[in-house]
Length: 640
Picture 1 (cartoon, rainbow, N blue to C red):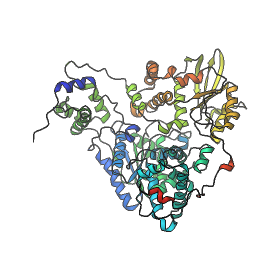
Picture 2 (tube, helix red, strand yellow):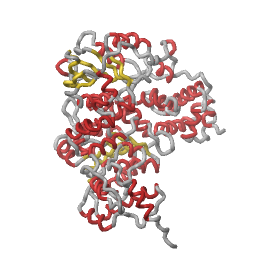
Picture 3 (cartoon, one colour):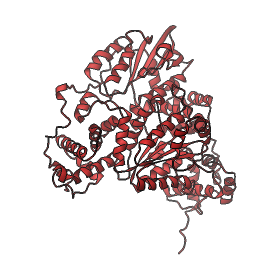
Picture 4 (cartoon, rainbow, N blue to C red):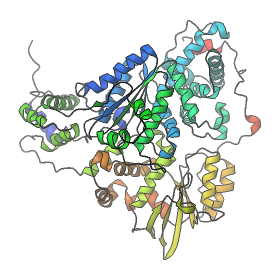
């Protein structure tokens, strides 16, 4: 059988001139983990990813937890391995996946993990629906199968397909849905040992696309507005590690769980001086001791392991980080894997353009790649070399070397924010760094002199007033307090407002600045008691918009990972902000930063939407299921 003829070289060379196949920044981030994966040579470091799936098989047989440590030098593929694990699990099914890379408040890591767990389970799983919905469907199947015990009608023979179940919820009215939720919750709590029925109820609410955001936020520990809590028949908040353990226990009834911890080499510490890797190590120990059915993967550089953990952390913690054998060390490229990597990249490139090259590595020749591979480069180093040394066809232009900070920034800019717009710590950290880049600059008639998180007495941090901007405005000393308050309501929102008003002059503010999305509802009590007085005394309401905060989040991520991932300096990051700020809305060109510093309007925005008024009498008993009779569950799974 003859080989398929290659495309005309002229067409291939034209494509190569127009777009470098290796122009994609050689960084693997969360977007590659959850979305389209980075081109993967599965034979490269297969020993590490294979170990995870071997551990998973042992877990399935013995129903216990296992923990694996992967060590790797920068650029050898730590996050790449995690991406491979995630995509293989999504393809094969049978396990849920959690990617734990960002802890925006290391002082509350256990609560941070509650957010990470819920946000991860909101991603699409192996059955075409979100992982929360996969879990809820499995729970519902158990309830339906127990019809003889529960008297729920003839449901035991009905199939439960997650996609169909989600569509069923979407196509029915509110009364019907609430009836199903009540019956499923009561039924599940009768056939399983459950400590907190509200967690069960919230998981079932994720089957409803209109409510999954609220339900998953509640499962993440966030506060619900009172009207929404009433609507879902849930308490306003459930934020504690016991909630995490209850969720893990329910998951263990139906699925294996793979939890991957990443980005542990970043120079971040909590207020007690503990490094991020040390904090996560203690969290891993707790999870191993409480996880009934799962595999925990922790990845870090050998230097982090040796200097921050192995010689510092107690043996009882170290032993829990690698229960499935010694650490797995990722390898550098060699001659063969270098050729394989180029082949994989170019295969994807040519297929997307319906082109067939004369040989798989064209325009590189294999001997050149072999020689480069003999030098044992990291994946990142090798891809950078490919980008800068690709043999362009005749008349091709020599591409200038890209700016290292720009490559890193664009990689971070691709990250999806999703629920991050509700992450007060993430947003406040991005704003803080944004103002840090403005020190000694004058913006909106304000000369920024310093920015500090030491807002309270004796320079202590405060959980609700994020930072203060100290400077001069037309010769007058000013102190602007900034609070990011994306809470839906409740105690936290009130606490933040009180600090901005600073009635007792505790924080020495000349004005307070509220950063909050106008799309978030606010009740009349908060508006009249706090927001209006804040604006009347010269405070600011700054509308938080995703397109304006996104570049600040991206550049702050580059700064955080400047040493561990991107190999750039602080000066290089600040210079990029200075030189490219206008193009990317950074520094003095960012609308949010400018709005915080601008003159107060003394007017409450008229486009803030008030949430519906509710009273205590409107709160119905969550056990009440008289909206539908018990035979309604038959309709839930009945075929059209």
